Length: 163
Image (cartoon, rainbow, N blue to C red):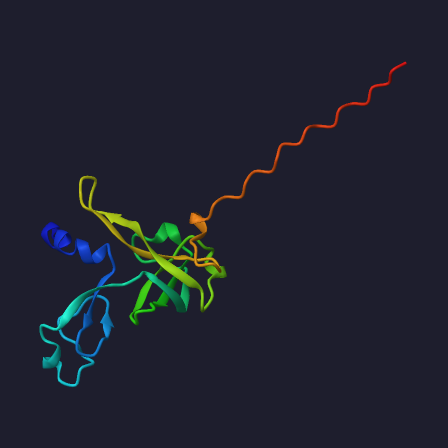
């Protein structure tokens, strides 16, 4: 990818920026210029508005990858999932910060941005979204406040015999 294209796509790439048809209300990611849902595609010309996805969603399908694509060999095994967002689009992404064998259909997740690769030692660093599981309260496990340490206990004092 050229550096110019990389910089042009930065706002969308790092913000889960999609588009929404102001005629029918359908949300798309990545953004589209024309809405395929509208009866006449011409109805949506110049009516597609920028739309920010929340980044939250639910795993609707997943697989565990054991034979990784180039550049991901050190991460196997990893879970790759289809995540339905509350806004409607289904996104594909790696599910991280969880053992792949623990991933389940219905798992609540939130998008997080991570380094994907680097183009040469002095090249552009590419980031992308992956999904991190949420706990039952809707909080990222890494964002939870750690439990307070247990109070220090004094060791029992040796009994003294006074004779």
